[in-house]
Length: 481
Ligand code: GLN
Image (cartoon, rainbow, N blue to C red; front, side, top):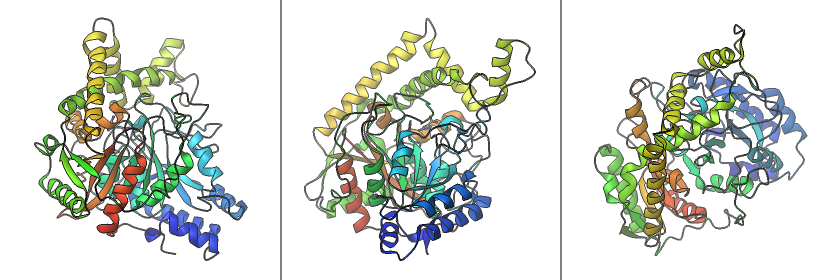
């Protein structure tokens, strides 16, 4: 079985026809995970026994993902497995329940093979903020896979699993997808449940999907999307049959081009590659229209105020009382909180808790947090205006291809600028998707991003599928199953 080249869709057909068994498929995926993890550090836990048991107990025709191996970012609760969020403060914390998206994956017959490494509490763009070591990029082991869902991106890129889940608060699915050469979707806010996703910034967080092609992302979204009584922010919007909508017809589609985002700071090879993708759309019969996103230039500042404010509140629950780590050399309660948090959180998480506490404190709240919320509303309006004129917007996903491990760790501002193209979608609540569109001269993946209006996932799938059909990205990384 060529796991590294077989999509979830193809696997589903082979499993249904009996050409392969679920046990063989899951065993192959586990073997690849164990073998490649020595180089990639993509998994924090690999569940050989549980996954094999589940593969054996699956009934025939168990669902759309029957017997398909999946990898799950270690900030999503899977009963029986650890949920560390890449942090020492949770360590090997074992949640007693499944996140709703996991319940739904399991309900469709998917088999979780393990939990993937990530930046601590999903804060980062390179995976170097994990307390358990950085993930390596399968295209070049001296480089980052992107973050914060880097383990999931690397696992899919290396062909260990056809699909994986991550979380995207400011780009953590799309940016690592871009740097690792896979498709990555952040759905509309409220499309999926966040129940069982450890909260970073609740008004921005959304579970996202990695795969090596659009069809597999569509297949998984169809399974996990929809209203959940456990998450009041999920919307009661019908879930279309995404797979059925996956045509390649884009004639007459209007693609918005925000030219101002193609200027300063954008790597020349990334620009050329995304412009070539725009030309492919022209050839396919789409119309390219210029759009303006005048407030996009404030998005990084707005994001890092709102995200840190929400994080400072969400992370207050890690106090040594309820979960994971507890400092044992503290005779008094407040000292115990302090020592636990001092020992349990890494530098970036502490930086964000301090920043978030500051922007919410009396005297600064109006100047920072209040102002950021106002600009967030303007960013949303920019998109509403733009989508009156086009069906989707195209931008680069990341300003550069994968950078070197260590290159930006000491410069938080340079690191934050990786998110320049992705954070606007979270601020506005709209869906965004990375589509691989080539390799740089150093053989590093480049991707473009499609952004759409609320609930426009079918449009994004159609546009992405048309592109990948016209211009298939078939390259494989040197580290691959
Ligand atoms: N890189 C961004 C951050 O560090 C986005 C993280 C995410 O989407 N989880 O906040």
